[in-house]
Image (cartoon, rainbow, N blue to C red; front, side):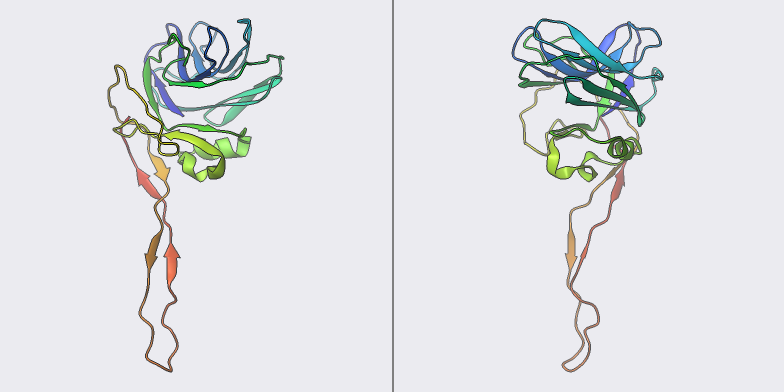
Length: 219
């Protein structure tokens, strides 16, 4: 997702996928309580113990940045800040996850609320490669990256809607603000051209045109 932090005073969750229990979550989080205020890919087991991959750089407060996390296995989690990745290999088995929170941890009792702005939130059912995450960090919509594995996509452009799974989302205490430009896919545009008179050669065959659009949206 794209994110902007308003304060470095605490830990803020950007996206959380949680178990329907007190413990157990995987989340993309900002660690305001750690040295250098990194972002992290956080894994928590059912016993409450956790492991995190943390970024080597610090996102600036008040500035938009791209954040992504991959959870490949119980011993492989990765965090990406503006396309640059860091890995953690500590073993941490996470229970079955069934809840999603945007701007919070997604637990049955919500918490770790994000202090700032979010946009272009997406979840895939496969671990993206570093090259694919680099594409997202350049400003391309998640619709360009592994679209067949994209299971949730919430652009947060003036409205809260999952354009992939039509999930029902409920907003609490949100406001709109301008965010960085994002390159979106355009719907297919089909145009049929006239053909030459009988006996002549066709001028242009029926074609399919698909152009990318650039849109500066609101979150």
